[in-house]
Image (cartoon, rainbow, N blue to C red; front, side, top):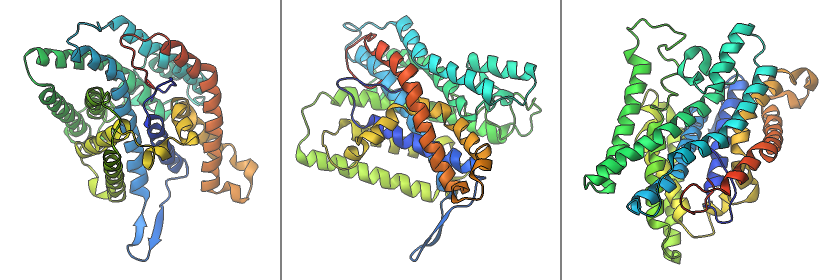
Length: 405
């Protein structure tokens, strides 16, 4: 979810972030609206229920962020491996420090704001536990803390924990590479293992714990700890790692021909249509593997590569490059941190001021919350996140590929 500017950036990524954050916002806005049934009437298909699509859309948005994070974080590691570790030595200390300092200050400021103005109904001791667990980024490990202070903040803890996992993923890749396994085979093994780990945690969360007596404050049947854990989201993150390899291998090629550009555009359109079909038929996938592995990861990974490797300047990628869309992607992390707080206040505290006017309907309130969140995100990005991003972009850790990392 982290975003930044550079003179030469990877086109399409900021726009893809914008799409992801909009889908997540739509899911949470629907939740704050009371989870109403949303349908559209069609003369050909009858009544189409959109509610499952909104729910799955939020899940797809989160998967996109994990894939993009794995993609961007892996670029320097792949350069290290593909050059046989001679020219670009890894610097683990710099990696951890850079990742942590770029995300943590903005996050901790959001935690403080939430603790002061939002999480005020609990006793002092309970609030202290919530705050400490969030400061330590372990609140996603316990049912009693994972959704307290702010529901969406589980993502930040899971993402940071995946930051810690990534070096071990590459140690695993390096080990197999030294055993003369081909990288495509290694990546296939990684994709399968990550998916199976996610399925195990998904099954444990929904079925295997039903006959085990555990403290529900720690973990519970159909709870949120296991489905939102790094292990359940490892498949999406690993998909980004795999896409990063393919990007590093092929991004240095000459500009694409017109025919190749059309081919990339066709692939992009097909993958987008596949996502729409999955979303509109999502009720058929209830109880399926976490994040619809492997189908969803393959579609999103293919979409990411089609956008980043193509050199054409028309079609979907041009739409994603429109400045309003791209800028929403740039400020997406700050947007994510504060959107739930603003939604809650618009739907709960703004209601008396709107009276019985049309603005008190769900859709206008969602629009008001969306615009307010953009304003707040712009402010925090300008004052905090953007300054940190600029600072660290001037201090690359290893190799000098300028990207929107």
